[in-house]
Length: 441
Ligand code: MEV
Image (cartoon, rainbow, N blue to C red; front, side, top):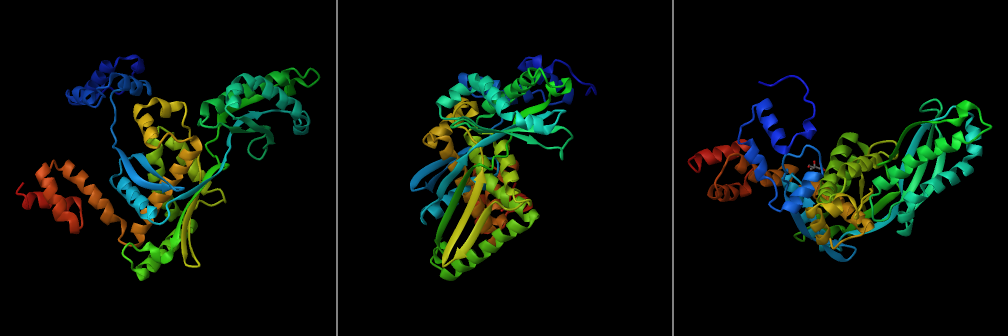
């Protein structure tokens, strides 16, 4: 019987105790313990790394680790590793890669790598007084943060600028130290947060040393110190282009023109209608997230920043653009994102390390490029399907495997069903009917 009260000390339980508690509390099948154990890696060292990534670890949760070859990026062929649970995503990415490889591939350029963080604080004093002394304060902030920034500076990074912002429109007496950072190949979250927390301490230390200031002025209330996942100055531009008539796969210039024209209209809609924009961008992040996850990068940070970037002009819009000009079709995107290739899960997780090897060990700026390529590729396939066959055809074909597995079909039945549904619409009930009648289940 489930007890309706909190449990204390759960995180201190051993794995077996945690599992036993769940089985007992929630009436789970006793075999759940073996089931959970089955999903652990036989590689003891790897398993230990996974376990140590999170508190209350019970087992590993598997998603497919996949690859798609043929990504031609700035003239170099790359194999992209992906992790996603959505059946059609990797097939769509692979198709887009192959399609554009025959048309010059993806072109990408980095447009900056600056990241930001803020120290948020309240200070009851004359804002002009703080501004007047800001140079002095800034020097002190930099001196105090030197032990943290030293190593990063050796790698060519560090603190780029510190700006004092007085923002009474948000809260009375509210200020920010708005700080720009360069973190080179690291995502830099720990570095940025450490600097900002040090700034909080240094600010109060500096204020308290202003002997001739009023008591109230000699102290600030630190609200919080944290990096921002909004990184509009850390971004890449990616594009594909070809003569409009080359958009057809079977030398049909009319079909190519129709596709180009409808594609441009679909992208235009995403840039002007929020309902469509969100789904359009979701299609972009299908690719971005799958590559980010495979390389152990923080895909929530990338998504959050990407969506904010999509709203940078005051209105949420689709991230990509498409045009037909002078007979040339161009499909492009600017994407802001912050990623790391050293430290963090990327360097730790054995599968992420392999993913990085598959990518030929890119720098952070190269990985930014690949993520944007994956986003544009995924967007291309989705919008192309939407304006031609519709999305369900591809989706349900890939989904057929999931349905067959859900219905416990045998290998023989799966093979027969795949053949049967090759030219038919796939729906759960149709597959169920097919298994019942056509294979006599
Ligand atoms: C599904 O995961 C993604 C799409 O909805 C994206 C889009 O509509 O552009 C197909």
